[in-house]
Length: 92
Image (cartoon, rainbow, N blue to C red; front, top):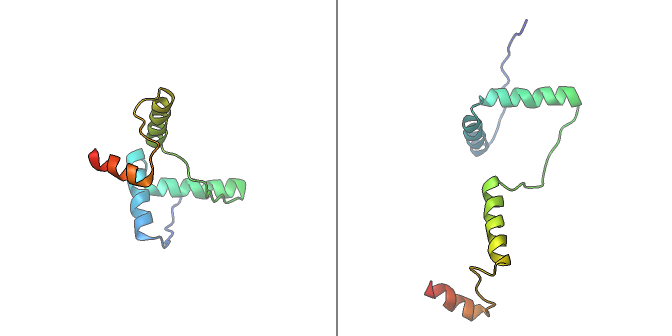
């Protein structure tokens, strides 16, 4: 028998919105994600808090493109002093 219950939690409004957005993008109800976290807690009897930010795929791709340009000596300006950098940016 698979009975359900309701758990009321308090979360920051922005955190909830962001979590709902991600869950929606993944095509999974937020309640399924929360249930998954609870099942993992039961299974491992551990809670993991990650403070190490992870790069998004978009950021990884951007950095890879920058590194490729750097190695090819393409799209590189400088080195500049501060005033030279300001003049260079103003001219763009």
